[in-house]
Length: 193
Image (cartoon, rainbow, N blue to C red; front, side):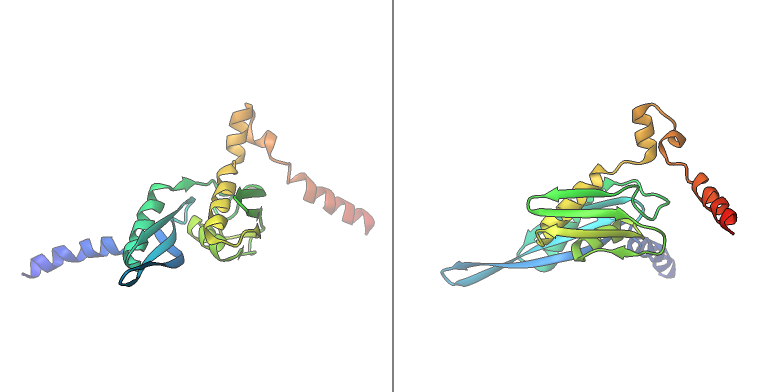
């Protein structure tokens, strides 16, 4: 009997540490009026990600909240996209995303900035694994449109490696020369002193 319990133990531990983490963004209760009264249904919006550059969102509808969340999570896992992150913490470049009346602006940020974003956008960035980003939602405040606009912007992002490959150049040719600028400033300061 003890052997059987030991065998079950690790299996339960494996199930408790899932590959993806999920965030419930919104639950909407809708009612349908029928002859006997009202029937309630629930719609859930969930964002799923591995916090290492993959993220997806899904929506689910059901008569009960847990079932709606389960359906939304399954759909989110099927619709995941991969986003290249700079240094594993921020975006490579500034971008805009649109969906319907929703428009979002996302900007890369220096280390230590944190996630500056509104509710639904914050959930996407946290599940994506972004640590530093500045973003603004302009237009629709509907969480569905905000998340779709954010995903639209993230799909447009391209890493320097992808751009270099597309243009047939080296990555060093595309990135700005950063080492020269601080050296030039230091020489200017010593010349003034």
